[in-house]
Length: 393
Ligand code: PLP
Image 1: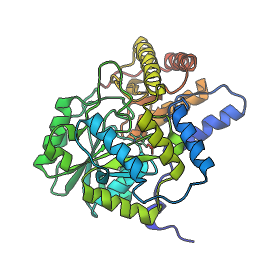
Image 2 (image 1 turned 135 degrees about the vertical axis):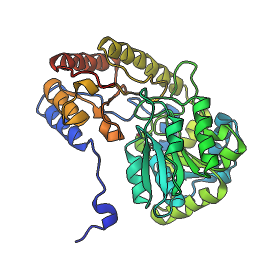
Image 3 (image 1 turned 180 degrees about the vertical axis):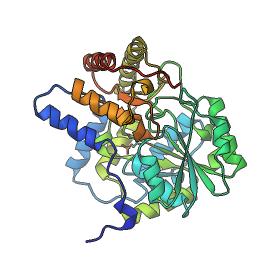
């Protein structure tokens, strides 16, 4: 049987080999600290879990509308209107199986063959593959040395084929939250060149201190008209396994995503929709507690990385740190660094190359403080065993 050309070259995940090796070492009895984790180590809020159980017990678990239940769309419209301070109606919301599903739906409905899509580096692992799958051409745009958006380079990356801009603030893998000026600069580029914007705001709820993540839609009416927001329950509500998210944007594109998904997946999961809606309506107390815990961990990670002599962009959101390890790399780059680290110290982290950017590694702090401390201790041991080369920065 022949696998279509569209999918034949699609990688499962660049980090799969590392993950498989980490599991192999753990099952052989080694005490592996896993800092590759991309999901909160907290349970979904009680009110969401109870709503899921109640929905199953009711027996009313049937297909729903392709765009999601009217009540969840309404609750999401209210939530988006409140949090982004711009009015959205239910007809501008489409419920999806996850943020990834919303993202892929949006890209498939926006991209024509050969369209170029700008994505500031480093970018979340799936962006480039999804753009390619949709027939587009991913165009990674270098950022500043501290991984902040470089607006001059963004403007310089424009060609006659550029159609879209993919933004992610707070960012996975850096935790960087774009400032109003940075966002306004990117929006200005989009307006000058008539680009659509897909704004992945899945970590919006997880920011620290006084920092708040802004959406392009908050900047102007014109920006709102060219933006599709992608968000969901996975990170904010620690509901990764429920697989539920949404896209918000102009009604014609939202309608297109719903029609597309009606053919691909039918309708979103009815149980997860009920659970998400309960979370939106009750504003569970677990959420700020989780964010406060992540903030404590972020502070610890940044303090220890500095003690180890590593620089990293300041993560004001999400639950990752992205230190520069360039001077410790050999010809195998960040992947070789991570492989050696796993073998020598039983510490699993993700190479920067998975996010399109060599010279860095991503550490997740979605694990308890004692394990984070242990992981960082092992990182320190590894670095001191590895001779740094002259700094290239
Ligand atoms: N966008 C970013 C930046 C992510 O980090 C993730 C998950 O890791 C997603 C989207 C996907 O979220 P979901 O689990 O809702 O598909």
